[in-house]
Image 1 (cartoon, rainbow, N blue to C red):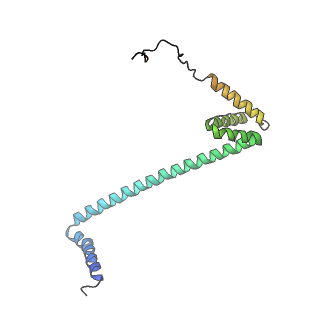
Image 2: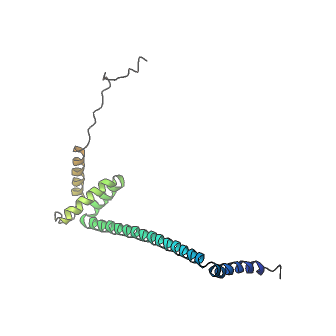
Length: 160
């Protein structure tokens, strides 16, 4: 009937039916151009989606490699240090993470070059940290502050 809920659906179906069959019959070039444009757009969307997926996959792989390298480093450090030294290094990392990384790299290099045969004790680690700190302090920047009674000031704030 006229008021049935199916009447609207039939009219929209009729419109898509007309567009699907009548346009190609009456305007074959227009239909071909529309199909070509749709195909081109679909190809571009697929290509960009594939590119994004590949970028995401590369990021995922890089993250995975970083995690594996970190895990290898942790395992190596655990095998080099005794338990007290490992605890000290982890405490150092809470306060100065860059210092912890520096010491870890030094330990790994020493282990790879055969300079470490036994486990590194807490005392040996302390010596390494102190040596690293001394080396850093000697290469640091020295500040020369003006003395309070220095008369080189350009502006005299007392007599304004």
